[in-house]
Length: 335
Ligand SMILES: *Cc1c(COP(=O)(O)O)cnc(C)c1O
Image (cartoon, rainbow, N blue to C red; front, side):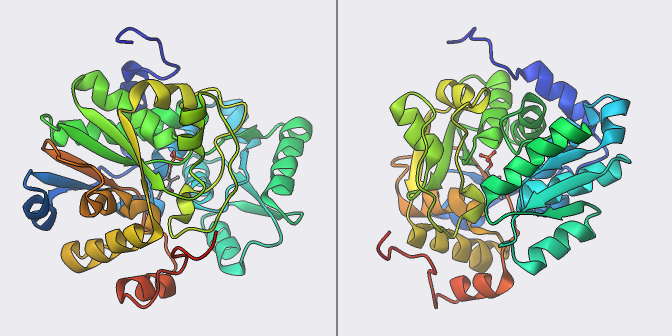
């Protein structure tokens, strides 16, 4: 395995880091007194939720846009994401003098549409599902020559997300464990390639929610499989990995040391801890690392531990309900 060739290497990530320098923030890496005391080993937090647009997705989107030829950049980029990838791509395209078209279904709430518009994207509202929005993406690629930038299964996107791993291992070179939120695996694949490229013995553990964990189900099955999508506090971790996954499935299979699943109540506890003890507002997906430490599901931990807080784009009404313990909105009611 040591010499396995991956679609994204440490050298690709180092190149991405130079390419996006000055366009993204080097977010702070801070010690956590509360988690260090709780775990008995040093715990550091990578505050990536402070990244421009509120999540790490800006790294991959920026690297992808900058990797395009001037001609392709002039034609514009397109994606179907209404979440953090859509926001990031809108911002990245505008920053580089390109335009992002974000396709979304009629069911997407007005505030999300307005946010993406505010970031400079052209919004195209079509159909009644994400699948229909994705068909429109494919039409714009085929007929208008726009370039699709997918949220995770793309080498330039993975290399961009990997720059977060470089920053972590530079801040904590002796890290024994890095905890990474996991959905489509762009973040986990990039971070694991960077971290293990620099420090082969550091363990990288993916964290996701119990329900609808497509990458976990796929790793267990040995091939990409579909899972039913279920509402979760960690909404940024929803969605499939693509049955034709070309990049992230193989990298996660080779590079992740473990994948741990968390309940809705555990994710809520992670958000509460981030707020009450660290004074940080994080969305559910951004809280799974803290949630895993609090849950005890990691067993006896070797340290030091680095935890990625990956995003902060949560509805503030929902955040308020969660941190005041009034509701774990999607808590284990019948699935
Ligand atoms: C997209 C996202 C993730 C998961 O990233 P993948 O590359 O899809 O695994 C985690 N946290 C936040 C906040 C995200 O937006």
